[in-house]
Image (cartoon, rainbow, N blue to C red):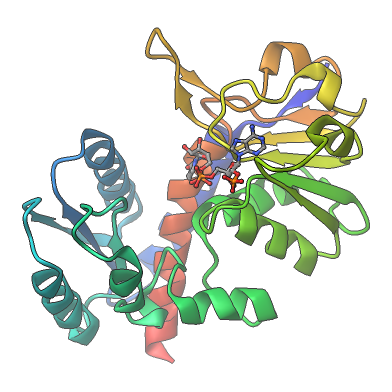
Amino acid sequence: MAVIIDGKAVAKQLRAELAQQVAQMAPAPGLDVVLVGEDPASQVYVRGKIKACKEIGIRSREHRLPGQTTERELLDLLAQLNADKSVHGILVQLPLPGHIDERRILSAVLPQKDVDAFHPENVGRIVSGDYLLAPCTPAGILELLDRYDIPIEGRHCVVVGRSNIVGKPQAILMLHRNATVSIAHSRTADLGGLTRQADILVAATGRAHLIGADMVKPGAVVIDAGITRGESGKLVGDVDFEAVAPKASHITPVPGGVGPMTIAMLMKNTVLAAQLAKK
Ligand code: NDP
C-alpha cells in the first residue's frame, strides 16, 4: 500500500512557517484579490484565499466587481493596484466573463505583483529558469515531493495535461529539477503505454478516474491534481485512488492532496512578492 501524501498537513505546516515569517515583516504583506461576476465556485475559492491570508497575517482586500464590468474598468483597477505600494500581490480570479480578454488582463498585472505567475514575463522567466514566482499548483506539487523526500532528478516524470496553469508549467518545473519529462494530452496515441513508464506520474486533466491501476508502473509516485465534482457532489480526482494506491509507492488523495497546497503556495508567493517589493 502506498504512502498517502497528506497535502492538508503539509499545507498547514507551510502556513505556520509563513505566519512566523510574516510576523517579522513590516509592513505586513498585502494581497488584493479581484473577482468579476458571480461564479459560485470562484466565490468559494476567493473566500478560501482571504481566510488563509487572515490566518497567516497577510493583509487582504477583496474587489468584487459586477459581471457586466468592462475590460477598461478592470484595467483601470489593475493600474491603481499596480501603483499602490501597500499592495504586494494581485490576483485576478479566473475565469473572467466572456466579454473580457483574459490574456490582456493577465498581462496588465505588474509582473512582480503577479502571485499567480501567469503574466507572459513570468511565464518566460519560468521557461528560462530565472524565476521567483511560480504558478501555485505545480509549485505546490514540487513542495509535496520535496517534503516527502521524493527524488526528482533523473527520474521519468509523465505529466498528463498541458494547460498553461498546471500541466505545462509542471513539466517545465520538473525539467529544471533534472527530471526526464514527457507531456501527455488528449491526442496522445497510447496514454497507458506512456504513463506505465512514469516514475512520477502527475495527472492534471479534470477527467474523473482517467488513470486506472493498469496505467501505473508498480512503485510509481502518483500525484493527482484533478478535481471533478461527482454525481453525489463528492470531489473526484483524475486517478482511481482505490485501484492505484496498492500499486504506487506514494499517492495523493482527492480531496486533501494537491488542492490545499495551491492556496498555501499563493500565500508563499505573496510573501515573496512583498520581499521583492523591498529590493
Ligand atoms: P484544462 O481543462 O485547461 O486542461 C486539461 C488538460 O488535460 C488538457 O491539456 C487536455 O488535453 C488534457 N486531457 C483532457 N482529457 C484527456 C484525456 N482523456 N487524456 C489525456 N489528456 C487529457 O484543465 P486545468 O489544467 O486547468 O486543470 C486540470 C485539473 O486540475 C482540473 O480538474 C482542475 O479542476 C484541476 N485544478 C486543480 C487545482 C488545485 O488547486 N488542485 C488548480 C487548478 C486546476 P488537450 O490539451 O489536448 O485538450
